[in-house]
Image 1 (tube, rainbow, N blue to C red):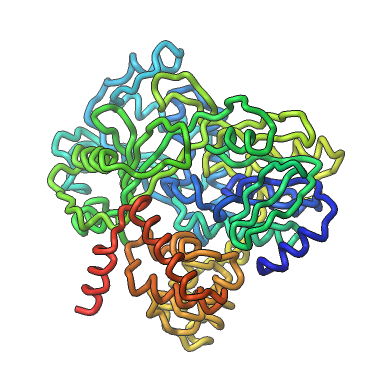
Image 2: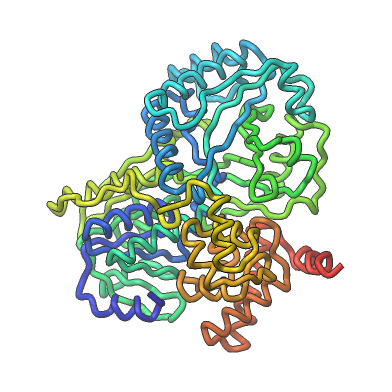
Length: 560
């Protein structure tokens, strides 16, 4: 459904049962749950869908090994269960990830871990082999009844150095276990959104919810008008923005959230890629903070920081964070130097954590819960949460809505495939070969479409054709995304509907090509095009460390 049709339907409605504010992964999850169960529901986001914290995650789908130190066993159990469900329900985007922990001590962290578990200290500390072995044993125990991924293994120093020769020579051992990773989290969010819309829900991006003298309004940033909305219940799913949203809609000024910022780098360095040998390296920095480095769509994703923030709208990557991440990487791979030009993308997001007076950010609970603010209308706030548990969190919030409305759940999403995960081929290579024969496309082109769209790649192959000259995409493919997936800005298309920017394929030529495509689809004037281009270039510079010179140089290398 295109935007004008959505707005027209919103104007025709005297009211709605539930208004979900926030189109991140948690908001989309509860929107899908409600729509699939027959609830009249509207979703609105002041920016684009999955443009906040849901676009800035570490791309891990995991149980939270380090949460065991804080005694968050329930959260780890739930996260591992949801990880395994995502492996089954979204196999096109969520895949197993072998994860290796380098170990530099044997007994370090025993006493400290006990103190943390008992709540007698919250500072970070180094972890030795015994602590890591204990944690991984518990990790395996929580999934013992449904062994989806292999159990952990320990490696002595000799085998560790043989497998990862670039690793710090001070390493004494290593441990390998399995979690998972998500290749395109924003696309998974869009697929869930489309399922909710197909079930009868309405969704509008670039539309802030504000309270005026006439009640709640959707303030359309694209068309410039206010659209009245009269919900019986509001769900505030704005994550780190929950407190700001509550003030904006006149619910409460009570402080519920206390998020922290996590920044990441995407690095194109062959030596680093080879050093990982297909594994995620899950390691400690010298201050005890957990960091990660793993292969991501042809490059390496490295992170992360953990810095308190007051206003999520001001969150940006900072030069000192980049330096911190690179220094942490040097702890585990000291012989590998990263040149500035090899950092092809960087991003920062806010973890939606509950308010806490903990002195150490790593000790703030990562669990999720809902809190209702009674009023006219009542507001259900989705507090906390992590990307891995979005489905169970959305189901929890939806069940609370069903209880208030006296509505019985009719559809359960525990084992419901998501988007292109439905009918995903058991033998992808055979499916690729068969589809290539049927469509006349190359196997590499079909494989790329399968990675992007899952089982929908068959129909996309008919639309997209064989061309891949726009950063691996065809014009027809991008036109389809613009006209069918709520694309309103260059950022929507190049940062979220595709992985063009995060993989380092973005250049000035690609931007201008996509700008012309958007202008044609939207009927933009030359002045509107100039404004859109300037806004996107400014966003790339301030939020992702990409300046015009870098974008131009990528075009020059392509020509050369």
